[in-house]
Structure formats: structure tokens, C-alpha cells
Length: 126
Image 1 (tube, one colour):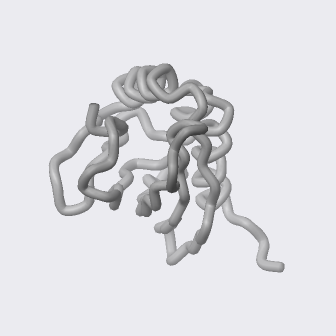
Image 2 (cartoon, helix red, strand yellow):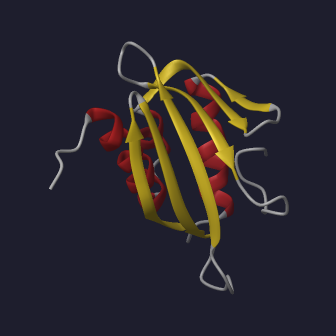
């Protein structure tokens, strides 16, 4: 089995934080000036503080959110993760999301490009 790197563990921490609904754990692997952007779209979040507030609101809106990693691959200093998200227990089908994590020299996540369905309920962009 291939040894996990710090970057892969950071992506796994994001999923652990989602499942624990823990905004502080979520941002613990992000750089202070981290950026969240919809793939080929607008920047939605800038900075760790804004990201923590965003995740706190998101976890309050979806208190039963659950996410499972489907695929996780590291290419150099970039990690690509496909995860499946259930927003609540009544969700008929999970939502597939892909995140492309970029890392700064400090080893923290500096940017996420998010690929998600067009009609996904409020999340990063709220």
C-alpha cells in the first residue's frame, strides 16, 4: 500500500471535518489566504476566516451532511478528490463533487477548484 502524503491527509481531513460538522477542523488545513473557486468560474471564498464562517453556515443549514471519498489521487503537489455528498437523510441521490486541491510552500491548501453539478443546493457559493 502506498504511503499517504501530507497533502492527501489534508484532503482526508476536509472530509472528516464535513462528517463531524467541524468548521475549525475544516479550516485547519488551509492557508490564511486560501481561495475556493468554482471550476472555470468565480472565486467564492477568500481567506481562512471567510471559509470558516461559510462552513459553519453550511453545517447549520445541512446538519446531517455526510461525505464519502470515492477516488483520491495525488499528482505532484496537487490532490484531486471525487467525493459523494448526502446533504440530508432525505436526499434521494447523493451529489458527486470533484475538488482539485493546490498547496502552498507551507504545505497548507492554498486553493480549491470545485467541480459540482449546476443545480447543487447552497454550499460553497452561499
